[in-house]
Length: 476
Ligand code: NAD
Image (cartoon, rainbow, N blue to C red):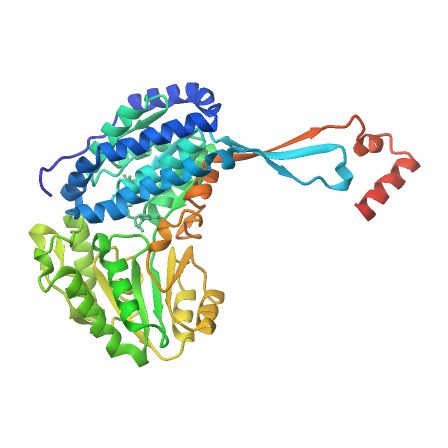
């Protein structure tokens, strides 16, 4: 937007040089004890504090994001993830003893979490700091070397992150590599031990295919359409306010934003009126002038979302709020639509913009049927005060995560696994689950006593040994 900056691709020779250096260094880094990793995490935390004003400016330049929204949706997520890792890392790294079955009496076993080795993190533009540094915190906590490629669409934030990484790490431990698709594909040719990708489902398939060439493990944090059900027992005012917030924060460019609503007919009018009021309270009657309302990341995405709305309207949909555009600013007013056809792009594609289609229903089975016919969403939100309805929704749908009576806040809960299922993702992140994603759970077993039952069952298989094997199968 302002101070246009751009990102250039990093050449393949440079990428290979860093990768080789990290491969050589990986065992030094991997041997580090919890206290050493905690020092790195504390320095990382300090850098976020030191660079806060530059981070806020970069996010304003990339997405016209209000500094408070940057604090809440970018900085807080990273500082929270770092503090959580610092608090728990010692416990996560501690070998985990497991029970010994009777047949293996005389042995002891434990799980040792070792680093995967050299890992690649590819990040999207929508929360460019949060979704680049979040997985990096987990990779560092797990003792890996990492190459990180942020999105080329948010160059100001990418530039600041590069500066920070260079001030904190030598490139043979952590390196931030700038560039677009060519750089990304250059990186994907290398035999990383793990690839953590956040982005669109279509690109996730490209990443997984590239990973298969080296059998690299993957964590794929993907997108999709997250449905929200507001039933007849929900508190209308609470639901409307929290849905307005979760949907329109970051201009709707949030992977877990409520993508489309199902509202019970009984509260139809009260809910839509309240939602309209909330949008006005948040962003004023002229959102274009509101400092709290950010923008679409670029003109391509602006046109994409506008075309969804134009198509829906020409097919009979009604705009009940918004529908105002400013092409030169990538501005789309917060928009609410009703009567959207199920086969329209607005109801088929991930919207990823400030437009919310509202559907109404009479019987809870109607939305459940629609949701089940689609890909598994990254998130599913339930606004209800009926235990029966909540149970029915959870048991009859699948989703990466669910929040009851709020929107998107599960992202902040580091004790829960975060991620999708199938089309919305593979693997989980945050807290211990992020540490696990970047670790190999190595099973280690030791023969402690000189005597082992298995020693008695080795060839040749005499009658006596056959009896012993039969007994073992029968009783142990
Ligand atoms: P994207 O998939 O276009 O880009 C993500 C990254 O992949 C970028 O760094 C980009 O340079 C790289 N890339 C793009 N095309 C590539 C290709 N052909 N080969 C190799 N690399 C390529 O995604 P985006 O537009 O940056 O982000 C939006 C998408 O990300 C949405 O679908 C959203 O739901 C999803 N998302 C998911 C999560 C999550 O946690 N599950 C979080 C944020 C965004």
